[in-house]
Length: 137
Ligand code: ATP
Ligand code: MG
Image (tube, rainbow, N blue to C red; front, top):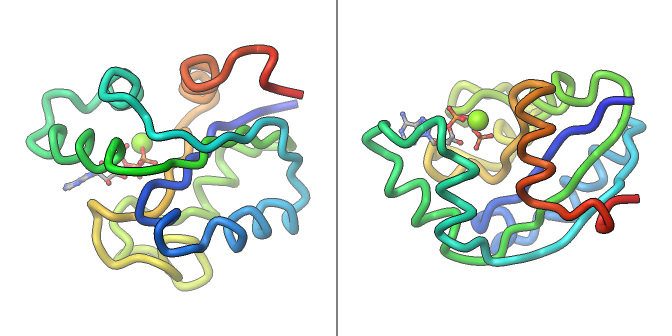
């Protein structure tokens, strides 16, 4: 079955909505196969967002994601990559429908609470970047 990488960003952690977010994925029927909290290093953050390194907001993005604890998770289940993206909402929270995570909890594109892999191949890359094999069940 398919796996995706989900990370609750420092704003989501600081606001105390990690449990709510985990509950949504559990309630949907997905299985949690890896979870840890960490403050990402600059190197990890730059590698994670390497596809965006030419963007004008890249430095702010890396500074933000390394500014505090992140909860890194791997979720497993049927079509979990695309379905998690639907549950998360649009990149800009103001374009995200109510009922999605960003639609319910965020207003700022630079403080949008959660990351989810955008494709199956990206998910595989991100899972191996953030987790060792032995950390996953
Ligand atoms: P993520 O990868 O974090 O799940 P995403 O896939 O919806 O988000 P990306 O295009 O991968 O969006 O951008 C990564 C992050 O960069 C976004 O979550 C957002 O915080 C930030 N970002 C994207 N576009 C902008 C923008 N125009 N201005 C400021 N920040 C942006
Ligand atoms: Mg992305």
